[in-house]
Image (cartoon, rainbow, N blue to C red; front, side, top):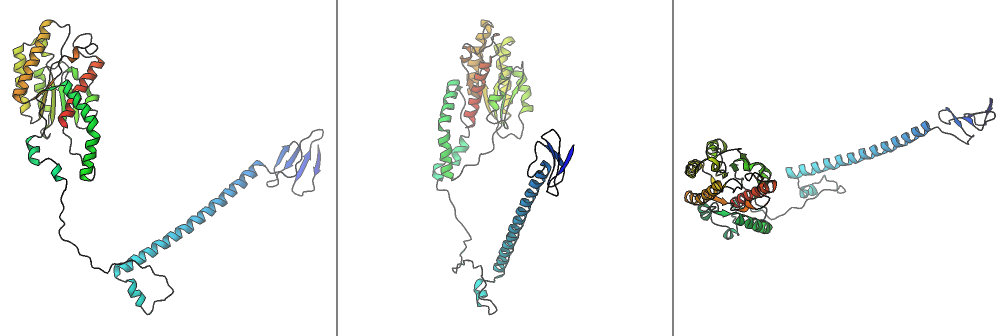
Amino acid sequence: MMEDRCSHPQRHVLKMEGEGTAAVACDSCAMFAILPKVAGSFTCSNCMLIALLQDKVQQLEERVATLQRIRELELFLEATEHTVSTKEETGDSPEKEASSPTQEPDIWRNVTQRSRRPRVRSDCLEIHNRFEVLSPSMEDEEQTPFEDLSLITVDQVYEDEQQNQSSGNVQATLERTAHGRTPTRPKRRRVVVIGDSLLRGTEAVICGPDKMSREVCCLPGAKIQDVTERLQGIIKPTDKYPFLLVHVGINDTASNSLQRIKRDYEALGRKLKQLNAQIVISSVLPVERRGPGREGKIVEVNNWLRKWCKQERFGFLDHGLQFLKDGLLASDGLHLTTVGRNVFAKNLRNLIRRALN
């Protein structure tokens, strides 16, 4: 190996005999690096990174200095504004400052606009609603607070749902136009749906529109007497005129006689009247392949329920023979399929919407 010194005093090159490589020293840190040939100048990667970092630091220092100057200007403006507002509160008007003999004429002053006319304040402001004639009177609302649901069929429920969907946007627009703003919604009534195992799986459809005030109480295998005993613990005394939908009776038709079923429904009615709630009784769903005696008993129970609910001023939801269609009843002829459960849940949800609206 033979050492060759270049003319540059801080740069040393060590040439390798028989090879085209050389050890070149960095111009900044004097560290050696093996290069394929001798270059005019050389800076290692570490020194390049240091140079980039120094440029970044310089740029950041300039930005910090700019932000400091902006902050100083903001503080100056805030102090000036505070001084002006203090003078206005103490009564140092621009007119007084202009008449002061010690005032320097070349200094700028912040002059605010003032009205010379004295303000007259009214002690009483009379307001009224010019759309009052369009709203129903309070006497009518007290006489008919809720709709009469003495007999509601499934077809009527679905017709009301289509009308509500078509007229919902129009009604909301009219309310905003009449009151000048979106009206505040009143506190929602509590809705409770209680019954036997046919209610299992209907919670999502029934409680979906309002999960805070709606609930489904499913009692598997429950009979009419079981629902009567559970009512006291479900409906709270603090509930203000809740809506209660009862669907029960399918299990009673399996073993109890028609007279026993009537007595149990009458006992349930006496319990319901003590709750101060809006009551709707759902008809017993039909069954298949359970014998002609049970199918006929269900028809007799529903006919009696329709008359009894009208007599007791309860609402009555008549499902009719809708669930005898193909695909709604399960293979056991008693419970519902997934499609049938969805149809049943929508029937109850649409009835609740009609009652609340």
